[in-house]
Length: 239
Image 1 (cartoon, rainbow, N blue to C red):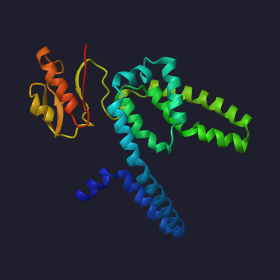
Image 2: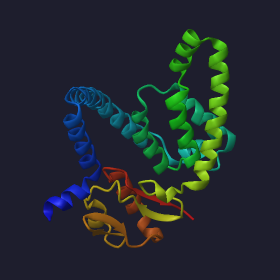
Image 3: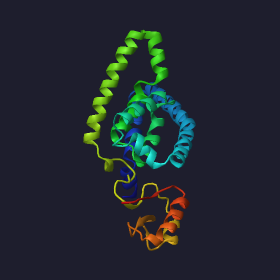
C-alpha cells in the first residue's frame, strides 16, 4: 500500500519512467538517445535554475507589491500590456526560467493576462530570436510574423484572463483588505505565532491568521513581524 501511495503521489515521474522503459524495450538505441537528451536538459536546468531562483528572490525582496500592481496589475491597462511585452521580449534564458518569476509576479499582484503575455513573448518574440529570424528568413518575414504573433498573444491572453482565475494558480494573492499569510510560501518557522499569538497560530506546521483585522495598538508589532518573516509570506492591506 505504501508503494502504491508513493507512486500516486509521484504520478508524473512514474509515467515518465514507464515511458522510458517502454522505449528501451521497443528500441534500445532510441531509449539510450532519449536518456542522453534528458540528461543534457537536466544538466542545463541545474546550471540555470539556481541563478533564476536567486534573481527572483531578489526581485521579490526589492520590488514593492504596490509597484507590481501599478504596472502589471489588473488595472494597469495598456501600460501593463506594453510593459509585459517588453519584459518578455528582452528577457534571457530558456522559457522554463520564466515560470518562477511569473509565480512571484502573480503573488505580488500581476494579472493573469500580463503573465500570459510575458510567457508568450519570452517564448516566441525575444529580441535575439527576432534578429536571427531577420538574418536567415528576411526582415519582411520577421516583421509579418511578429505582428501576427503579437495579435495572437493579445487574443490568447484575453481569453486566458477570462477562463483562468487567480485562485487557480499556486500561492495566495492579496485581493481583500486585511492580514494574509501565503501558506505556499510559509516555511513553518513560527516566528509570527510566537511573537503575536493573538494574530497568528500554527496549523499543520504552517502559519494561519487568527485575526485578519488587527487593532491599532498591534500595528507596530505586525510591521516588525512582516519584516522578520524569512520568506515574506505575510502581507497586510488596509481597507
